[in-house]
Image 1: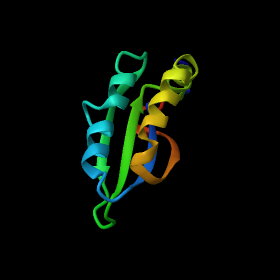
Image 2: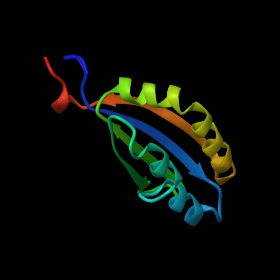
Image 3: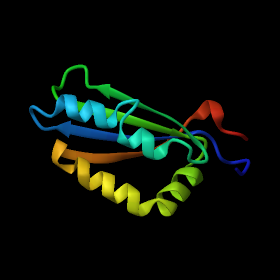
Image 4: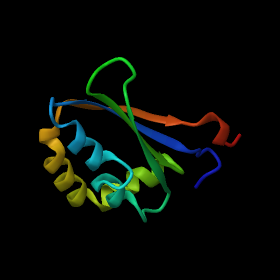
Length: 110
């Protein structure tokens, strides 16, 4: 990791199909397929799953990595597995989108 790197959070927003909430929470939760895929990857720190406070069936995931480079390297090395799991989960949502990578200010080095 270079001196400019800091902890990176990859945020995703999902609008879950009605009736698929429990299945979605299992797949994206702390023991679900995504966490299983990421676990053991260099730089992976964990995943948070949070339902929206006021919008039904809307969720946010936060995938925490030590640096964006770790996440990018993981995606490149595990592209096939990532795409397979993504395709398996596609029918759980009406809409999804990556909100971006946010570097955590408290972990940045100057």
